[in-house]
Image (cartoon, rainbow, N blue to C red; front, side):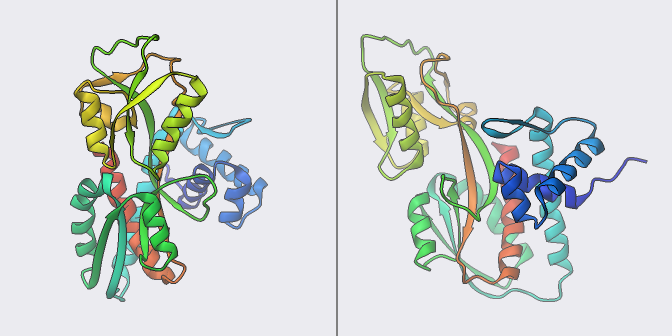
Length: 289
């Protein structure tokens, strides 16, 4: 008989990955750092392989750790959905969601049907906008929950999924050092734009913005059309004709985390059940990306 994975160990593993260090994860699960370390060791013994590597930069997932993380999130989501389905209480009333414009269509395809199935009495209102704008709206109490790009300095956020950002170039692109690098940029107030400009500054490469847009699909289309290079989510490379820039030309080692944030006024039960639906949707989105 196959051994059964311990949900408590999986929950701790997910918190360690989210926090990036054992100390913060220990506080999140109300255990000591030594206890968290022991739980990770027990989980590694259960699965028979190393899941995490520790270095000066913090915690790094091994290949096996990355594989387990996806399944781990699904286990925890299904656990929450199961408990919610067995509950006698049906959530009702109005709830205001914020979803980033770049992920809205794909996410709503999966999220809205699931939400109607699991919480049929909930009156959902959706706002699509940039992540930083959604953050402001949550802080002002205009939104109850929102999906946003993770940024340094923000805590108490639940990670839904993550993917690498890759410097992408049109098929057949040849870099000419004597010419400014043509760049497609997101418009102002965007974390990806900030990372893009920071990479260019560190690399000390002459560049020329030739295309700007607030929409990721437009930036990707500019790359595919041969107008420019840009920093794009890795999943985008699978659906457009492009390729990564030559190694070493630009730094570009970034992980984009997509997180769930919420108003402090939302009640715990509502938040838990909404989070379960969103995480289940995120796992479906991840497998499609």
